[in-house]
Length: 356
Image 1: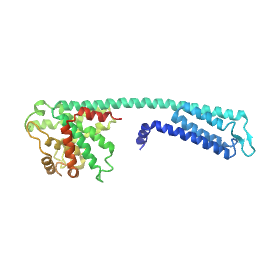
Image 2 (image 1 turned 135 degrees about the vertical axis):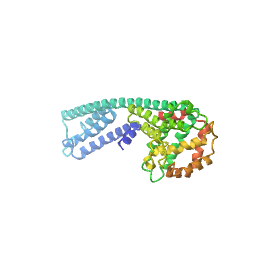
Image 3 (image 1 turned 30 degrees about the vertical axis):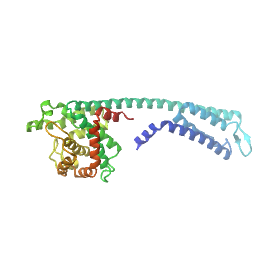
Image 4 (image 1 turned 120 degrees about the vertical axis):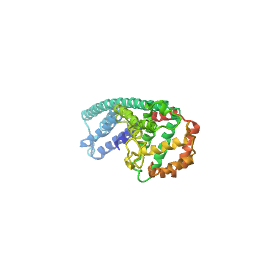
């Protein structure tokens, strides 16, 4: 909740400052009327003027705080009676001293506020620079995994968009409506292209083999999940709070696990498999079925869906399969749109990391 409040303040900072200034001057006038109607400056209510001065000092800095202090001091000065009932005016020295105190308080509070604003802005800039480094690092990892395979570019883009879409559909299910939020959807979208990062360590004779792998070769290719997770864990040490890398590690490590526990690398089953990896498992298989390879033709959407349906409750999470089937028309449209336009990872994926 606090993070959301901070984000709202960042995006609407100037508007908030302007509104607080207007509110403070309005409050100054209200306090002046209150002082008058309660008998004049002989009462303690003149001290209420410190409130609008403090508000402007913290929101707009010492310059505007001092201006407000001068206005407040004059309003409660020569034109404000000491005692309204007897119409006794204040001695000049009284209101001048009060004015000076207002100005001093405004200056000190404004100075402190300005100092902390500069520190805050400096920290924000440093955070932006660090975030940009993180984005560039993750993008470099994606490009690295893409470089080993001529088919990977569109595959990476498709799985990213399809994971985002399917996760958005899952959010509509009561079971996941509180678990999946906007941040979760964005994280799986940005992390999913890293699912096969471990393949960068696979020998070309296996990775690019134009035919079925031998049992020994398949055992080698299975290690890409562990290698990918370990690679991302090393990057995570440099960026311990990066949520995208957290998602990427889970997806890379577990996206070949199966619902019935017969997958690899850890033999997890059911909901012990992270949700992000369960989503990726379906998307990865669907895209592989739809894609042409030297050893196979591309399957139609209908045939691919039929094959995936056969894995419901064994290979795949049945709830996610049901969600896919309910939205398969739009799912197919998204796949076809990306493939036909030949959208590449450079122009779309990296731009998602560059948005503020």
